[in-house]
Image (cartoon, rainbow, N blue to C red; front, side, top):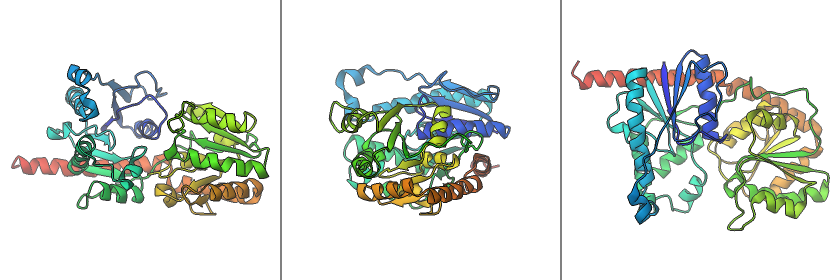
Amino acid sequence: MNICYLIRSFNTRAGTESYVYHTSIAMAKLGHRVHIVSLTGKGRRVFKEQENKIFFHQVKLATNPLTRFFRLERVFPLFVWRYGKSITKVLRPIIQNRAIDIIEATDWGVDAWNYLHERQVPVCVRLHGYPGFKDEFDKKTLKTWPKKYIEWSMQRKHILSADLVTGVSKSYIDLVRMAWKIREKDIQIIPIAVDPNIFHPSDVFRENKSILFVGRLEKSKGIEILGHSIPMILKIIPEAVFYFAGEDHKRNNNKQTWSQYLISKYGKRNIVYLGSMQTEELRRYYQTSTICVVPSLYEPGGTVAFEAMACGCPVIASRVGGLEEVIQDRQTGLLVPPGDASALAGSLRELLQNEQLRQKIALNALGSVRKNFDINIIAQQTVDAYAGAIKLFAEKQKSKNGQ
């Protein structure tokens, strides 16, 4: 099978990009060929031993002088329009020369909206979500006129027109149905997967009383809530150390970033900012930290939780979205109400001081991930979904052509 992934950006370690990267490798190992089409990321990713099966194509986005002169992009989603046109232009020769069987696009990138008008092969839309989406939906700003409403319409059509739609969790699929008023479309759950060859426990000494946060340092990831819980922890456990790994963001509208603020408030002895990390470096922190904390206000799936669990690191997470579906409270992790700093601090204190509970949770979580979320299992599940979409698409084409 020849598979083509469309993704707007491919130069960071973010959730969607991590998904495409690891899924591409898993597909190549199953014997399939993979093409990745993106605006960014050329030369940034290495596909060891799979160079003859995974191919990268970079999109060149033509600039529009009207956009710069009149600043129309602030009012209309011209970038999405130009990006869609550019994707279609790049796809034509790839499909013709490489015999692509199926294309997968992201929901937030609306990558295939233009190509869907002339599709020659079936298109799958993968529901990943984007930062702030749940907040926009709750505050009813998802469809504000005109730019947001046009983007909303494009995303809705993108999903409705797809030949296959998959989502990372039931929770997120239900949210998508409400947000884009989609009831009639069948959506398959294909959860986040973890590669056991990459994320696994080790015999390295696990640091005592260390808390690891992985992700963008921004409000939607619960950085503010975790910040409020830190003094509650340090009051009882002054030797606790908080490690932060991920892209640093400005704190509210302040000049300080979140890492700068936390270090200035609590000191370098208790706060360590690691920056954005390579997979191998990040794995080492999963393997050596006492706890991994995922205090997100909403998570469609929760890649960080899966990776930590696979490395034998106990997880404390918000009781939201996909996290609630994969973590069984007090069995494979601890769940706390989203936005509740006191509850988060209480769970952190309990787990830091209870080694027996940590070991129980770590062992149960490792077994759950290996049984249900191994990338080799999920990759085959994805291939089966692709095969079904390809077959149905071929039957529709024959019927359309009167054969």
